[in-house]
Image 1 (cartoon, helix red, strand yellow):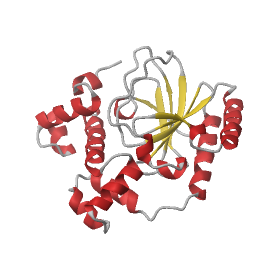
Image 2 (spheres, one colour):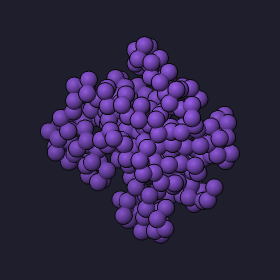
Image 3 (tube, helix red, strand yellow):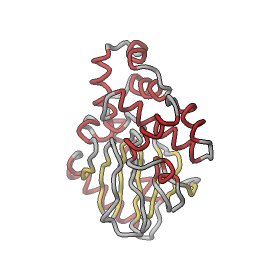
Image 4 (tube, one colour):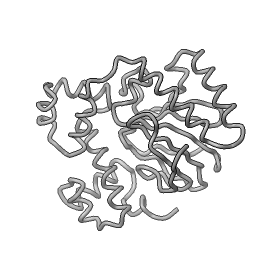
Length: 250
């Protein structure tokens, strides 16, 4: 799988997590063994193609914490996480149709292709490693991207500008769209409107800064919140728990 690193996962995924940059541009290949006290997965604006226990699933963009309750400790997941706006070209449906959902890949791709990929993944995973599984997920995703109509760069530009905290009206003008057109594009590409995507991407940045040990007041200023109280409200609203709970060891 190339170089990996043990870390707390993106947006609050805890313990047993590894990731590396994918061969699919913009994507990240990750693996995770579920811990007994696994925390919810938090919104990050991304969609994922996931292999676990002989099944292929698609995780849509979330608007709140997603519990991993009911999953046996030790269960391993291997996933390919796509950058905001990248998933629809892989899965063939607008991101809004996947919002806050976990969907079998067979509901989105032709049954024959999913069956063939499932068989190959099962064979690759028999020795217990994840390298072969990761390569197969990347190969399948890359093929779908080649088959697609391609992107003119507008979606990535929107995500980048919103991540910088630019007002929606300015972003719309920058990509030559009306605000209404930008809202429709955002729903299809990201799963939610531009204001919600801004909040989610700001949360991701705030958590990353806080994990580095930065004081919360400085996190609020650097991530684009009005003040520390605004940071606290947004974290509780999107993540379902205070920052201190999200960053606690375990």
